[in-house]
Length: 219
Image 1 (cartoon, rainbow, N blue to C red):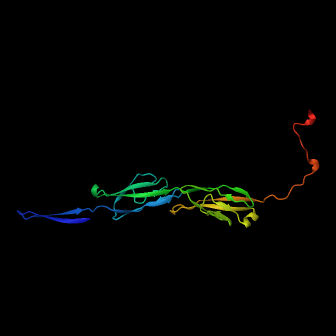
Image 2 (cartoon, rainbow, N blue to C red):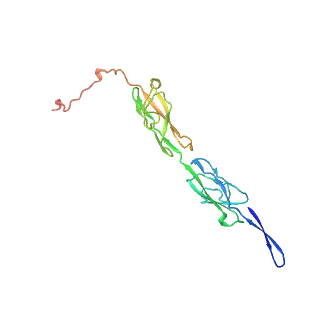
Image 3 (cartoon, rainbow, N blue to C red):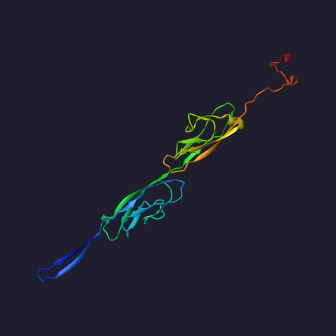
């Protein structure tokens, strides 16, 4: 604020009248946008006033515990752009400061996989899906090969000899969030590898029977 002193001099009676005029400066404050994952807990928003002794108003009041303070608590809902007004009853409305605060809420990724069964020597098309707040992922685990690579949700997997001997392998599909806002979501799939049946079964000739239709003996 700037204070001006004004002296009013009367030429007739030589009286001097002194007044002080205070010119209020325009209000100002600093803002900070926020980004969070949808399943996170509450998050405290904040604006930093340049000068003290002022009041605030947040609009809309959606998902805020309070709308008339500088640091309301936001409960994750939809992404919202808030209009924040800083005002002081001692200054004209034209000196109010109005700014926006953007709160971005990112939906968490949903990962889906399917357990599969193959025989030794076979390959398998993996059945992975990433939806919700993501669309990409990577396969973790396994000592076999992924074609074209681990980033393909429906990669063709060729088990290693060790996995074939073990009869099973677990693969984990993890989502990828390039923004770093949400943690990775993951699901484990079980791949069962059955041995190939070999050899022959003994057959007793006395157990064999042949049926002819139509039966010529029934004519």
